Length: 291
Image (tube, rainbow, N blue to C red):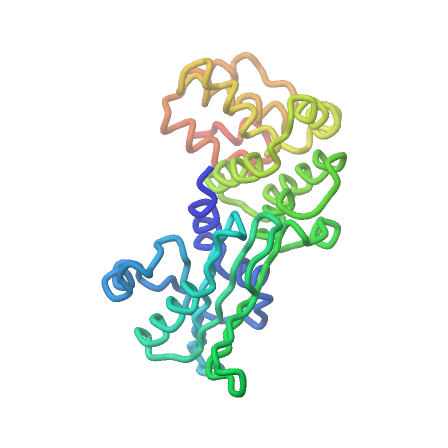
């Protein structure tokens, strides 16, 4: 999995939640958050610019606070982190945007050693002192975020500290958070894959998840997205999407009539996508497939 790209997507899809979770940013109500244009940065910053750093400009239209630029960087392996590169990037970005309101944030996926500050001087005076907000996800206790209303926190539950025997529970709570905090069906599919990739359940754990959170309760429709999609690939793309939709409808609404099943199987790809977007808001199976 491309971890940098996965986290870039996460931050761009949920910028306010990402800043609240990774940077402890508060009072973002009413703020306008926009990514800084990458193509402009690439021209100015040259080789020191890495496309997968995510600069976000936070502005308050009412003027009650000065604008701030947050630079969020994901590092999978702490040993590869370069604080010198980050200093260069922050200084160049500050010059480009004519601001000193720069907040660097680094998200580490794995444990390891890395420099936490850079101080330049001659032993008597310090002429440059630089540090950053450090998010070591693997050290954060999962218990603190199991019921979080922050979607970025819930999606990252598998990346937080927990014993392996709790992995299925943590996976389920992450999927539950996705199902309750995100109404967009396409993002459901996108971030079910995100959770699956980082939870990395074994075959036995998948079986436990089915038994404890799906087969018995039938109330977690999103937990099977990746599992069912993988099964669907064996049936062909369109047939697989139809099979996926039918299984999810059955999980949510109970047994389906054969007439409804045949209608879903006969639908084209565009119709299946439209129906798939309705499954979380429809009250009945018939509402999902209404014209």
